[in-house]
Image 1 (tube, rainbow, N blue to C red):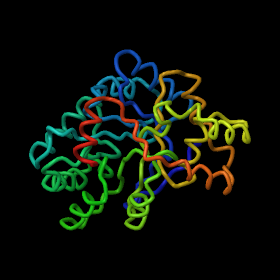
Image 2: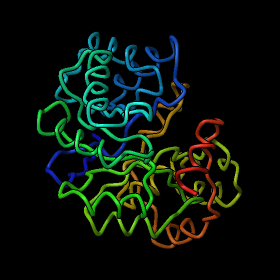
Image 3: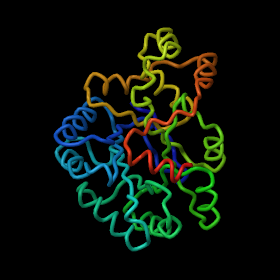
Image 4: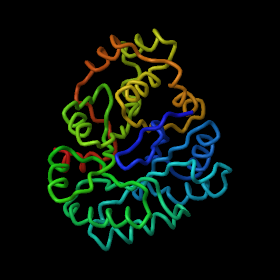
Length: 276
């Protein structure tokens, strides 16, 4: 069983889920079906990933009860604004073949996100999302949002690994009861051959990927690793039978090099513009 984290409105989110960024075509059905079969109960998608419809098909075909699956999706940049956001959630729900999602996020802090947040609150009140939050928001964005609303985002999804250990934003969110979901927790594979990481993994008889995921779990983060390979999907969820020692956690914390691994040109441009 994957432990759950209680969001600041009482909704429980599994601390580990399946990321689906760049998961397309028949791989969507294969990967999501397999993940559900081996125990995943949290699926993270987005309008921009263009795989909501295929995920919806699997959700309809799978035997796991809807109430046992936590679905996150995100509002894309072209859908900002009050009316546009209300339409966007309807589109996502239709594609996912769902009456509600468990978590709905603003994908990027583009211009107009304050007005959009008003729609997010309406979406929450209507029950079309059990929780709402943001993604890729840094402290200045959160400060601007919190100055205008009483509804604090329940989640902020940001890139976070030992190699991008942004303590300031983590502490800021922790103080305000905002749960962090760590995107790209496996550094897109770029650091899995780090000798220091391999050495720590060998101490526990685990893989470097499992150490990265466990590091986030022990920091109270929600981890959403992605893989298209079944043995790795299964391996990624097998991280609840050991604890990383305080000594090794401290060493991992010291790996920070401000490494961002969002690889697509779109994400690079957005990160440069909105994360600065």
